[in-house]
Amino acid sequence: MQIDSLSWFPGHMTKTRRMIAAEIGGMDAVCEIVDARIPLSSRNPDLDELTAGKPRLVVMGHIDQADETLTKRWAAWFRAQGCAAIEVDAKSGTGVKQFAPAVRMLLRDKIAAYEAKGQVGRVLRVMVLGIPNVGKSTFINKVSGRKTAKAEDRPGVTRSKQWVPVDKTLELLDTPGILWPKFDDPAVGVRLAFTGAIRDEVVDVEELAMRLMDYLGTHYPAALEARYKISVAPDEDGWALLEKAGRKRGFLISGGEVDTERMSRILLDEFRAGKLGRFTLEMPPEEG
Ligand code: G4P
Image 1 (cartoon, protein in one colour):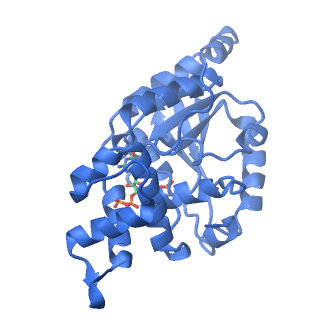
Image 2 (cartoon, helix red, strand yellow):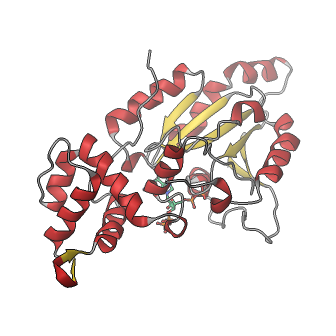
Image 3 (cartoon, helix red, strand yellow):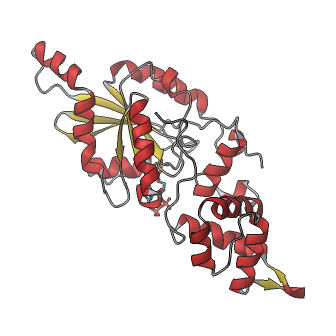
């Protein structure tokens, strides 16, 4: 299944690049929000180049929906890449309190240098970046206590940058700029569609659900067995599992065929709502 970036989010890439280039000089650090269920697929691969070696804090969001053990392994992997990393559920606020101390730890040398110049309590400025739907505004609202709507990223809506205070000496730059994931690898688009970051309107829902069944059948068969009361054989393919689950639920159309479209939507909804459990859909690259 091919999902290209144009069908997903057109027209913002150049503007975002320009915005980052214009603002990056005044930043002490960059905060990159990723989805802990798909920590690589939810990243923008050009960020290193765009942010010119600024200290980086990776905020792994959606941990309430991700596999706990793998989240720890991913956090360790990010740290091994030279980034600071924290794990949060931005919706409930779990882990969000780690943010300010993590920024200050990341910038401890810089803070010491500011202090040596007599700039005690100088405000630290952090640019927050993330791909669409990753949870950027939910996180910013939680960490700052802000209640206002997010910086608009829809075409035709006035764009403005917003400074959002976290505390007296830490400010976030929320911008309407959005990054884009790397679509060269088709699996990236599929993972983004699994989590709902790419809307179902631009994908083939049955094919998507079949792929998800394939993945879950291979990596988390017990979760499928428990939720859909079906047996999962080691080599059973996604389509067979989708039909089995649909039949078990009684989703039949005339002639006794399984209504696979209905089952597909149910599977995706239940997966995204966490009803099947907590899953991480990609493994850290070579660790160590
Ligand atoms: P964006 O600014 O990056 O575009 O994303 P936004 O904050 O709007 O978040 C996209 C969706 O992800 C929202 O759900 C939001 O509630 C949810 N979300 C963000 N962070 C987390 C998290 O850590 N855990 C969980 N479980 N969900 C998170 P929505 O369905 O669009 O809206 P709603 O359910 O909040 O009404």
